[in-house]
Length: 115
Image 1: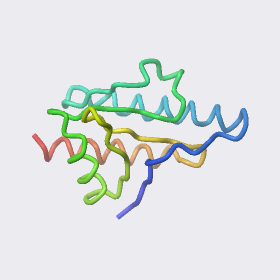
Image 2: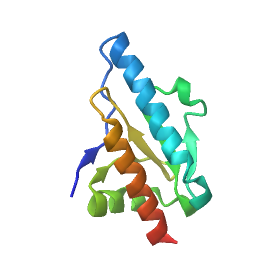
Image 3: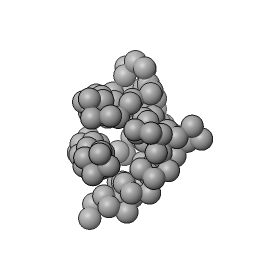
């Protein structure tokens, strides 16, 4: 099983890294927006170009903690649960676009199994 750790935002060290994190944030935001018709709600960023390394979502029925646990156990995707039932995916300059595509697929599979 692949392991993708999105539990902490790594600090961007310079302009190039900050731009990369912005692009990564926009990429994950766009991929997760595709799942809104499946029940996922993308909370932030509201403007993908303003992203600074964090994408927050809400699963149906606010099942954040359950989603975090199952994404980790079943798919190797590590993320964090917020106090309001939201889930946070934190990105850093070392995150890959391929890893984010894998995360989107894992979230989609989780949504299918939860419905």
